[in-house]
Structure formats: C-alpha cells, structure tokens
Length: 300
Length: 205
Image (cartoon, rainbow over all chains, first blue to last red; front, side, top):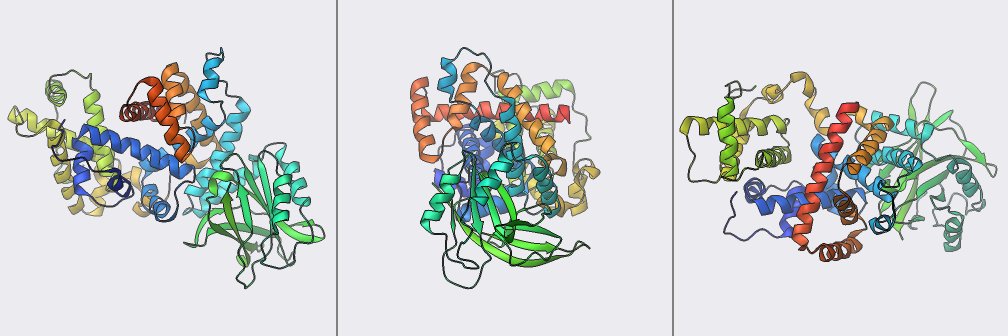
C-alpha cells in the first residue's frame, strides 16, 4: 500500500477527524496508507476508552455523543470498550497474574455478574435519546443491579446522613457533612442527600467519587408525597439533554420526610454539573415535573 | 442493489483469486490484506454516516475486482489508493441516490426507519442478558488468546490518562518494542477480540 511522501498528519488532526470533522486528506490516508490507518485505529480505540472512562469533557464529549454514537458500528465499539473496562477492572494486574500458577484468568463469576449489571447502566448513559429503552434499562436495574449487600448498606448510609440538613436550601453540604458521607461510604457506594433547587447563586453540593468502582446513591427530599409514583431523570445542564432515567419509584419516609432514592453507576457520571428532574407519575401515566436537584461530580 | 451497482455481475473464483493476489502485491497474506482493506473501507463509509457501510465496502471491492478482470491490470496507483478512489466515487454516487435506494443496498427490512436507525441502538443489545453475554464472550475470547497477547492487551489499556501513557512506555520497553509498534500490536489484538466477541454474541443470540 502507498507510503505517501508528504509528512503524516499530526495527532491534533486525528481527534477532530474521528469526531466527524471532514478531512478529505485523512479520508484518503485512512484507506491508502498503512501507517496512518494503524495510527487511526489506535487513536480511535483510545478515544472510545477515554469516553467510557469519563475522561472526555466539553466539546469532545459533546461531539462524541452527537457524531460518534450515531453509528451502530461505532456504538458497538463503545459497548466492547465498556465490557473490556468492566472485565479488566475485575481482575488483578497482569504482573500479579504472571506470578500466579493459574492458566486461566481468575475472574470470579460474581465479578462478571456485577460487571454485567454495571454495563447495563453504562449503556443507559449512551442511549439517552431512547427514553423507552431507558425505562427498560432502569427497570432491569431496579430488579437486579444492586449487589445483594448493597441494598441494606445503601439504606443505612442514607439514613446515617444528617437529618437536619438546612431544609429547602441550595447551600452545598458543609464539608464535614460531605466528609461524613465519605466516611459512610463503603467500597462500592457513596451517598448524597439532595434538596429541591431554589433560586440562588450557591454552588450545588459536590459528590466526590473515586475514578471508578463506586455506585452513587441519592436521596431526593420531597416537600410532600402527593404522587403515587415518581420518575427521576438525570440531565446534563449544559445541553439540557437527559442522560439517564429511572424506573417508576415510590417515595419513602426518612426522618419524617418523604424522599425518593435513586442510585447510579459511576461510569455514568463525569466531573461536571448535573441535575435530577423529579416528576410525579399520575395513575393515567401522565408526568408532572415536581422539582430539580442540582449537584456536581468531583473525581478524586 | 441500488442503481449503478455491479454487484449482480458474477465474479469468477479465478478472478477473485487474481484480485487477492493483486492486493497482496506479490506477498501472499492469506487474505489478510483483503480483510484489512475491507475494514478500512467500512470505516470510510461508516465515518461518512452511510447507512450500509459493509455493503458499500463490498461494492467497492467488487468494482475494483471487476475492473481488474476487464483490464487485466491496473497501473499507476497502488491497490490501496485505487480502492480509495473507487470508494470516493461510490460515495459521490451514493449521495445522489434517493433515500429509498440508500436503504435498498441490503435487505430493506434490515434498515427500517432511517432516523431511528441513526439515533438509537438496536434494542435487544441493551438488555441485561446481552451485556452478560458480551462479558462472557469477552472472557472466552480472552482465554483464546496467547498468554503474552492477553497480558499485553490488558496492560495496554489499564490505567487512566497519564498513568496509562507511562504504563505504555514501560510496557514497550519491557517488550523491546517502539511505542508505535506496541500500539499497532495492541490494536490488532483488540480488533481480533472485538471480532471474536461479535461472532460469539451472534452465535448465542
């Protein structure tokens, strides 16, 4: 295959190209030049990995979602990357494996099951345009995603939150309370109580996540429990697009106040601001927006 | 097949063999060059958001093979560059086809509503079963790799951003490879894994 005399384009051109920016020269090289085709394939894999790990932000992430994810083939690469990331997160480092005597990789089946559950949610983040599908994903999650020990542990953590958090305020959680939330966090869960959003300039409360391996739980406090059921939509305020949607939920009483609890897998959350929109679901299926709950994610 | 297609012209086995040899340029790759060219063409059409990149890639290769059969030889361009030229003309042709002919490239029922195809993934794939199946297939496919390849692919993609970059440098040094050679090797292993997982999932669905 040809080896053009002209210098190869630098990496600065490859990323925009992968994200849909037209470039006829790169079109040509991608087919006709061995070296460039290899570089491009490697860069594409790294791009997809970065997206799945939540390392893309701003315009790159936006373009990834508005261009890259519009193709079934490209989505397939993302699904593979999700599976690979989840699988590789569940095994020891190769160096450790080499020191062992096992011929097979010691992947516990529970890890695969957990990874499968997490993968379900990662997909939810990618498929935000298909609300009906989100409903199915969330429903499946509600049925099976929380590990056996996760349910009660999660509930305990949430109940361990201070019950008198500046009611109906947009003030961020005091640092010590955030730290308290962290102390209450198990290896796989981190919890945060959110209050309905009111007018004000205060920054939203922060949820501090480890780069991976956590599930984030939120308790959304209600003014009053007037709907038979609720649905929570996670939105990206920068685009106002839904990122995830819960199944139908029931309110519960915690500390004398009604609230709705949702939990999300960490891969869904990037370091940025988010808001939950809580809707009441009427018996006829109609939805009414009740309130918004803002928060921001900080990766530790 | 859409207007202007030549896919209904039968290509003799001997002509196909000749085409493979021409792509290989004298070094028998056992069909690898053909598969690699097809992969690149699929990428080309997919990046342009064509509805059926596989069909367009196949059509490109058929046209090149046909031309080779008719002319006896193709000179002045490398095989890869010639394939690119044919693909770019096919893409221009594709853009002129009415939408109903875009979807006629393959099985019409495969495509359905164009907008929903562009915007939404296939639904069955989103189920918990599909995710579990993908993970199991991945595990099986990884078992099928040699130990060295398995360690390499896991270590190559392990870690985040700066950690990953440093890890790759260390890995390349340990294996006695340049960073570029390591990247190509990791990419080939990953492509093989992706194909294996795809086949495995299709077999079990």
